[in-house]
Image (cartoon, rainbow, N blue to C red; front, side, top):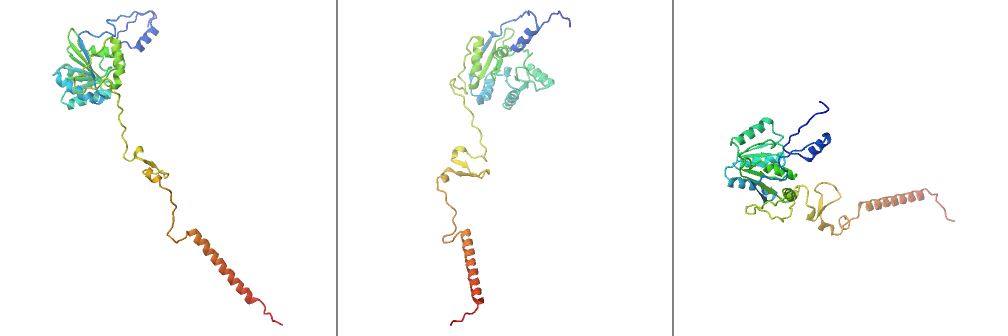
Length: 292
């Protein structure tokens, strides 16, 4: 490549990492942007649904059933989540397809072609796989998961409301995503209207609920007043109630001595008997003494 050259870089998005890389290898670059990143299309109606994470799937099915047969683009944060959403929608009778990085090129092309031709009503996609999707008549975009980067939200909702058409962008927000929602509203310099009239509404001030850990059947509950004994074997537990009882020594039957004492007494008796026999033998061997 010639040392003196002109380089052009085109991108629908410009992350900070790419901008830093371009600045490190270019000299006095000129940046041309069609519109600021923080600006959203005015023809797109935005709304947010506060819902618990476990109810997002049911809320999506309810929303799609009430919206009629309009084509919808649903964004998921992860590839596994996209497959899970697609499977749930097909089970509910809503034809859906998924595109993400783990799909082959042919599978992604078939899903996108089926969505454009109307064979699929819903297309579930991740942010990377959705790049390059250009669908003019797309009335609804659903943010099933809010993005971690606020700029990504602007690019997501920009898929609808194109060519002067009116579009709608719906976002689901659970308790753990409220900080991301605040960052998005700070970026677009406006508050997104909250839809509270739905069957799965969650309070905005509702605390985050931690799911209880599943306890194995072989492991007893620590709070059930039981603790492990010194044997170390699984299942060797005794109740705290038994610990309060005084320890008892092992005792034999009443009136019966222990084995060690009986053995020592029997040994003493045999020694005494042998001593008596020896004394009698010595007396018998002694010479007969005559008295004067």
